[in-house]
Amino acid sequence: MKSTDGWFGSLRAPTRVGWRLALLGLALLAGCGEEKQVATRAPTEVTAMTVTARDTPVTFEFVAQTQSSREVEIRARVAGFLEKRLYTEGELVKEGQVLFQMDRKPFEAELLSARGQLAQQEARWETAKLDLTRFRPLAARGAISQKQLDDAISSELQARASVLSAQGVLRTAELNLGYTTIVSPLTGLSSFAKKQEGSYVTPGEEGLLTSVAQMDPIYVNFSISENELLKYRSEMAAGRLKFPPNSEFEVEVVLADGSMVPERGRLNFADFSFSKETGTFLVRAVVANPNGLMRPGQFVRALLQGAARPNAILVPQRAVLQGAKSQYVWVIDPQGKPEQRVVDVGDWHGDDWFITQGLQVGERVVVDGAIRVAPGVPLKIVEAPTPAQPAAAAAGP
Image (cartoon, rainbow, N blue to C red; front, side, top):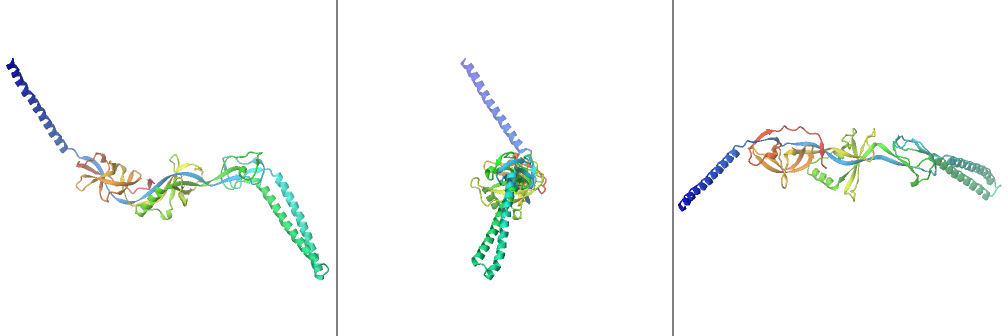
């Protein structure tokens, strides 16, 4: 038995060694196959573009809100009863159109009384003038004393002053009567009536009847932050941004549904200081609104056109990849090999990025297929078509 076990033991030992040698051989053969596969790997097909520099128009986009260019509160200017409302609430009213009519009868009575008082004072004045005309020759001949002449002169002057005072009272009565007919001072949309027929109204805060807002033109207000302003200034100082002469931007307005307002506006006001609460300052554009397409209080987008970036470098957004610490592109060297290049990107421009640093004119950049590129990987390069001169596209502020 011992010799038999020894024989089986000696038989099993060479068998285990043989299997190990066989497995090692297979592993070496597999490794050689992989090396051969890497060596014969097909080139990665990519598209590439040649970096160029060109003057590129840019558009700045802001969230804005519309405002009436002229909004007037319609108030009572005299105290009295409101007799009629003569306009349809919410509709367009014309300049000079009658909106409300107050009870005229008390004011007509005051006007008659003022006319009577003026007539009385004019009669007194006429009498005083006649007396003075008679007294002057008598005083010259010494027939009356100087005091009598002075009294006649004083009476005539007092009568004249009384006439002027009565004329003022009459004028006030005429104005008050005219104020009973309340008209719109401008053409615009009317608000609802805050007082109804039969109400007693008084001048002041309690006399607010309605309001009228002018629709054409209309204001478009938006804000620029301090950081945005400083950014624009630094880019202009570095020659990367150019504003139109005198900052005469054209303003396009985009409504909430994405439709464009046909009329273009212009900037007409910029606040002189920053808001302490928000750190922004107000900028206002005025836009024609003949068809009433925009109403006050709407949220819209304001597109400022007229700026440009001189000699700007643009690459498609898909060519820029995000690394662990920075953004980069694949640059193709003269031997056709890819080289990773860190770049500084600016604003978006349609489907492109502005590249502020990292690329030079004439270099070739991988556009499509950049995600599959790795150092040392052979490339099959297809030239991307040269982009045409782009129209102005919205850029981030």
